[in-house]
Length: 149
Image (cartoon, rainbow, N blue to C red; front, side, top):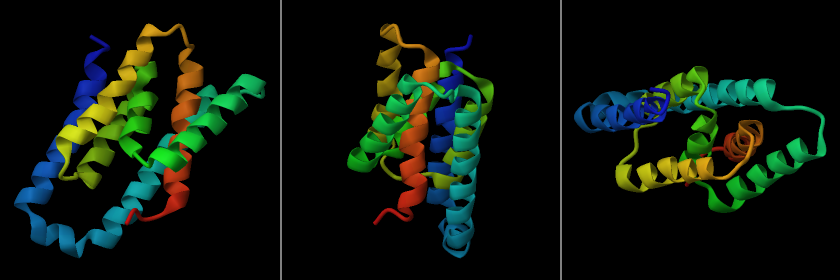
């Protein structure tokens, strides 16, 4: 039953896409508000991930920095969001669902690939604490980067 959490969270992106497609005039007026709503939701998600996973150890710092490097070079937020859901916690999935409603983008297939690809990491014996920190690093660089061109 827990494996349905990421699928339900991704439904937010599909719903956001449908909202953007069928109500485009509302999206144009609300663009600055949606931008700030996205940043606030990502900041809350980042705070939650760091609060639940960070400890003062070398491995924590290494995984967080690796997430920053990956986020800097790859620039795909969906990959970081998929990794954030590897812990199968309920609260991050709620943030991801609401973020999907706010963000709703056109390229659902590409985003689905980046979103569900991290679930192959479940085959590796990594503690979810480290994968969560990896995702937090990617989300952190996305927040700091600002608007994607």
